[in-house]
Every structure is written in C-alpha cells, then in structure tokens.
Image (cartoon, rainbow, N blue to C red; front, side, top):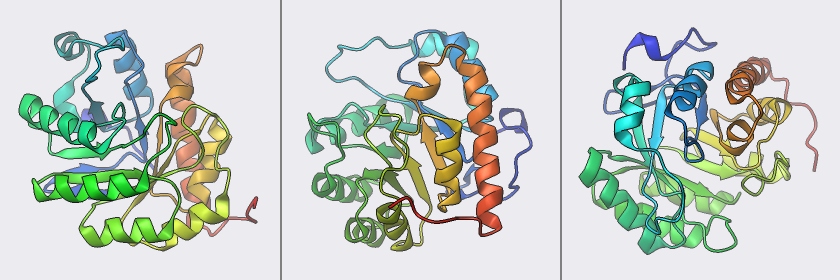
Length: 255
C-alpha cells in the first residue's frame, strides 16, 4: 500500500496487521451499491480509506461494476483488497463466494457474512463457515449479532477480528443495544468492527466512543445526495469518536 491511499489520520499505528498488510484507516466503506467507478474513487478518497472490498453476486441479480472500469478510476494497488460474502444467504453460498474471490483475484482476507432471508447474521452458521475458511488459509472477519459467547468462539478459532451488528443493515438506527455490544466487545481481545445501521456521523461517533477499533459504513454514504461529502463527514466522526474513547469519554449506555 502506498502513502497516497491514506490521508493523515488520528492514529499512526495500524489497528490490524495481516501478513504485512496494514489497516490504518478506521473507516471502512462498502462499495457494493455503486454503479459509477469515478464515484467509488471519490468516496474512498474522501473517507481516507485504505481497504478495497469486492465480491461476487452468485445470483447475478444486482447491478455491478466491471473490475476493468474500476481499475481505470481507482488506484487499486494503493489499497488492501478484501473480499466479502455480503450477498450470501447460507454457509454454502458464503464458502463458494470466498473461494471464487480467491480464484479470481488472489484474495485471502474475507469479510464473512452469512445472512439468511431476514438479512441478520446467522451466528451458528458463521462460526462453522469461519472455521472452514480458516482451514483453507483465509484470514476471516466474521459478522455476528451481539453475543459474547459467539465472539469468544470466533476468536478462539483464530479469526483476526470480529464484526458486530449495531442494528439491521440499512436501518439507520445506530447502536440499538449498547450494553450488549459493549459486553460482546469486552469478550474478545482481537480488533472489533461495528457496522450495520450506522446512518449518521453522530451514530459513528457513538460507535467509536463505545470502543470500536473501526466502523464499516455502506448504505448511508452510498445513498447520500453527495456521497463523497458524507464520506468526509464519516471520516471526521470516526476520528472524533476515537479521540473521545482515548479520553475515556464513553458516557452512560442508552440501554
């Protein structure tokens, strides 16, 4: 990764390192909803992101960007590439998506989602899929509903980080059960990413105040009237929340 991918941030040390690939930006932006390569470039730049996420839609029912078009607009070599199984509705589909991403792009860092028809993470299937992917040599960042036992099991299995749902994807409800999220974070020593339903900069600040190592935002930015401007706001929110957390300014839980 070159220095051009990332602007000066609050932290200088990476929050996650995987075989020489370093994650510095604490804002991760999903790009599955975009159809304009130039807008993807603008959004990633505005967010000071250092991660590029790609996936396969096994059902081939969603609009997608051609990698050749993205390569013309985005300096892809400047980013750490990770895959996502965000469209997977079952453990089987998640495994198939991950394997295809590795075969096509050499990706071995996987943002693991197993979300059935209710679009909520299926914790049990996620634990099983994570173990299978790690046995195949993947680094895995699994997405779960808040649950300390599940988070502990994933850490013990060897997951490099854990992603915890704040509220249903695209709901813009923020962290709906702060105590459950906090207890789940406290159960592990690996980095924790909060995501799902983070619809405003204020909600991102709160997620970071609670102790998240990073946040992932997708729909709020993708559907904003000016996505790059909101990406900038989200980046500043991450920095503000991180600075507050460093000072112990967590405040009372909502629940």
